[in-house]
Length: 232
Image 1 (cartoon, rainbow, N blue to C red):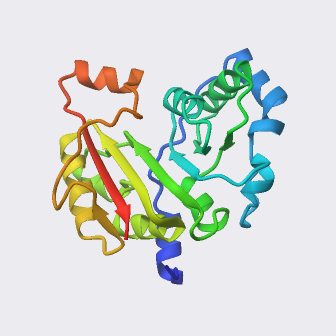
Image 2: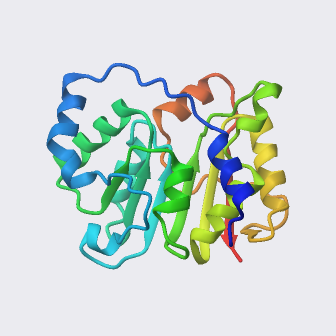
């Protein structure tokens, strides 16, 4: 996809997250001092050579907004043939994940602490990604805030431009109105096809573990919806 100026500005202008940094524990703070040089990628605004970062050429999976990193740590440990990129703006979660990765000597994960839209626009070259995971993003449930939802037509077009042919986009949410919004956006997106057929949600795949956040939603009576789309 060739991004026009208006689309690029629109994506950067709308923030789909609120930066509630919170207080990092001493261990999380030490993670930045000790492990960032190994696991972290500093945002430069230029396309990265991920083969150099990982020391190999392999399929790449991007998880956007990984929270405390529980799912990303598990997935990368059980899928050593692929490399994982995580993007998260909240420091405590980044620190927690780096400590978990360091404890097992992980080699197939690199992390950005930056806005995902800007990373996608400037740091990830077209055709780079085999899979993108966007699990339980902020639903912005108040109607006046719906425009802040990250799943919008411009965003999924940007994702498509960074995907390899037949690359997988996996969305998940525990907020029913957002699930319907995601479905509407994706079904209208010309670059994507629903893996299960038009207007279909998917069963939870084995590779998405049930996280603390998801369990909290289930206890509140929220139904979880997964959506699986392939790059045309």
